[in-house]
Image 1 (cartoon, rainbow, N blue to C red):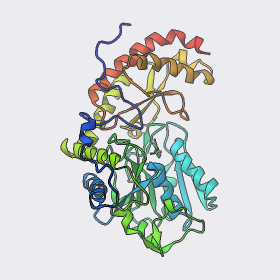
Image 2: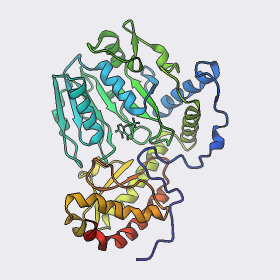
Image 3: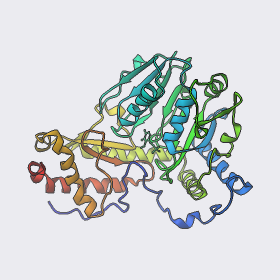
Image 4: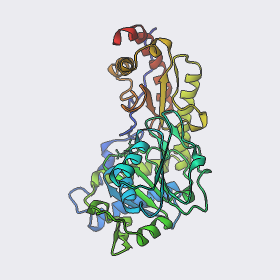
Amino acid sequence: MQKPNLRPVVPHFSSGPCAKRPGWSPENLKHAALGRSHRAKEGKAKLVEVIDRSRQLLGMPADYRLGIVPASDTGAVEMALWSLLGARPVDLLGWESFGIEWVNDVTKQLKLKDVRPITAPYGRLPDLAQVDWSHDVVFTWNGTTSGVRVPDGNWIADDRQGLAICDATSAVFAMDLPWAKLDVVTWSWQKVLGGEAAHGMLALSPRAVARLESYTPPWPLPKIFRLTKGGKLIDGVFAGETINTPSLLCTEDQIDALRWAEGIGGLKSLIARSEASLEVIADWVAKTPWVDFLAEDPVTRSCTSVCLKIVDPAFLALPDADKTAAVKALVAPIEKEGVAFDIAGHRDAPPGIRIWCGATVETSDVAALTHWLDWAFAETRPTFKKTA
Ligand SMILES: Cc1ncc(COP(=O)(O)O)c(C=O)c1O
């Protein structure tokens, strides 16, 4: 097969850090409050700007709190789990590595006893009807390593007594989130908007705040996790007074990303860009015999972390241990050509391909990539037997 002529303009398809927004340049960061204190008026105003623009763009209810917290999405999720859990039984949903991490964290680190892990293998969602909404419920909106997302929030009870705690890092800004159904929502800057890493966002519903103010967990909390003082919410965390020092360069970059998102038409446009890329991949998968979605049910297919499995008989005949090497061999020529980086599936997922299709990726680049995948597959298939 001949090498395709057309190349993606941007070869960045990693699922995190994700591609910078189209037109990004370091020049856009020249107004960063560098060398200034994040507690000074200018620095704090930048942090507040990230919070305000994020709220606005996402259509977050006015009575929800939103704060910038340390340690990226993991930091935000851990703060929520360690600060809120233990007051009620907990249902823990996991269907890929990140969700399973939260299951392990709650069962093995917090050592909560009254928990129900509700899990499913890669490619599927667990049975959401099993969830008991008198319990707290922990789940990811989009399973980044399997490309399986919950299709909507209809399974979340409006009159729930427990809290719906949602790790939404690869969903926010690319999927519609039903805010009234969610009590805790977390994300990071480097996913759908292509920001810089290390900062987390933590959104809390009034019910989550009420829990924080009425319940004290029995375990010690490091300063970095603390959201209350003397039984009251630390308001400053939600008003740009971060717990520890943030990067004002990353902050400026996030403001740039949020401005870009507003400029292209806001959340609707972000979602449309992502869904359009998913559609291009779906069309390609439909006519390509060697590849299929890892997500079994089309309504659960992620529009951001699109995970594909290889279903060619020569690949399937390989011993499991050799499949990872075969995927490496498949993506190597694409990477060598500078056409696409970081598209091998996550190390914990079944060996396959993962193509990030969040809003900062151009659909035309995704379309161009599919031709290169066809080319690489034709080149690599004869070697599958030898990868052992
Ligand atoms: C669903 C999910 N949760 C958590 C994480 C960890 O995020 P971070 O590296 O921002 O802490 C990721 C990263 O890809 C993720 O996709």
